[in-house]
Image (cartoon, rainbow, N blue to C red; front, side, top):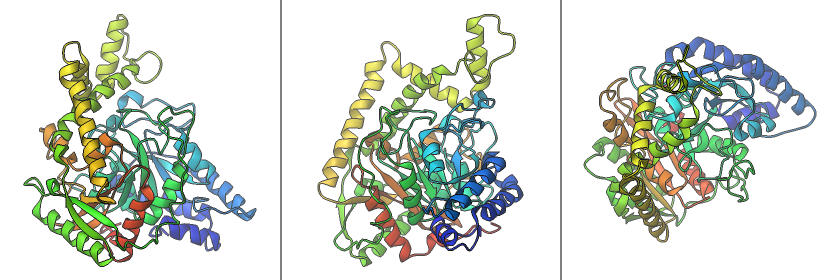
Amino acid sequence: MHQMTLAEIARGLADKKFSSEELTKVLLARITQLDPQLNSFISLTEELALEQAKAADARRANGESGALLGAPIAHKDLFCTQGIRTSCGSKMLDNFKAPYDATVVAKLAAAGAVTLGKTNMDEFAMGSANESSWYGAVKNPWNLEHVPGGSSGGSAAAVAARLLPAATATDTGGSIRQPAAFTNLTGLKPTYGRVSRWGMIAYASSLDQGGPLARTAEDCAILLQGMAGFDQNDSTSIDEPVPDYSASLNTSLQGLRIGVPKEYFSAGLDPRIAELIQNSIKELQKLGAVIKEISLPNMQHAIPAYYVIAPAEASSNLSRFDGVRFGHRCENPENLIDLYKRSRGEGFGPEVQRRIMVGAYALSAGYYDAYYLKAQKIRRLVKNDFMAAFSEVDIILGPTTPNPAWKLGAKNSDPVAAYLEDVYTITANLAGLPGLSMPAGFVDGLPVGVQLLAPYFQEGRLLNVAHQYQLNTDWHTRTPTGF
């Protein structure tokens, strides 16, 4: 049962081959048995899962149907879940139980999805390796000595190890796509505003976006269908009709114009990854796609701009965690200032503290124009580059990451080296564009991803290309040894 995709589970439940309750019990037992190796879960919700599974079976018995009805999933632990710990991977929120469900959680629950638990993540989604979590690092199921990527590494590791078929995740600078690449999954960051951020604990509000992590594009289409849509509670949610993402999966790629930016193939890219990307291009050409070289001239400025904007927004968003209303509170504070200082000093880990300090500095008097304002101007230039490119091509293709997953601890002493691993992914967040990573091969036994980017609200086009590619390749079917 654990090898089935979401689409296969939907068919099996519809054909009464097994019940949601049976499937849920199998997967909960599997998580209990195997997750100690991975540390991919922060909280298991067995009671809730079995309750939801029984309810889904009853709904099916009454004639209801739906691709997510009775399907087991997990939520990244920054989506608020009523009455269940929502920790954001931080000591600061270790004792926090949300009083409400995030819109994403509520929508998927209404569709009948079964929540198995909350997955581990980099603290407050800050990191590219899932090593900054207060609950310990997550391991990559392809090689337990390597990172699974971050910040959605718990969701990625759990799905890759077949502990469950799919999970929710979030992407601020590549945190869905990079873990997908490192663990041989398909991961989709939707257009900014496509998925509600209400109840999703914020890191950088103008960049964060929720999306699906699964093994196939078909499964991502199913999960995104349940997540997407306008939400009046979220001022950044866009009132745009949600298409049937599964309906366009089988559209022909004949004549599809794919742009390949020359800037992607610089000295920083592992030549073995470059070769796998070229193989992917040839595969898509066989399916009728037309390849064109394009340029994204301002890409070189994206990382410095991102690492000013994101920490600036983080320093503002995380000011609410002060030890007063909720979250960690220090023992016996002498006064209000001592309460703030010690609660935040004890509650936040080193990476979060580093980014808060960078952000507060960039926003401080005398530096706002020099850093934050300039970074926002670069952001507009990055967006303009994409708009110019999409006037010539339908999608943009390139590597998801410059290197395969590194060893645990390898970049801990050099945060900037880890930041540079986001070079191909952050531009989509700066511009608010949809992006997808899909499996493209292996380097030294570690998975590699190819990234696709599309114009606003063209998630269906990305899923269509990835699905057609997966019908003609088998990288996405490979399973890590031991799982």
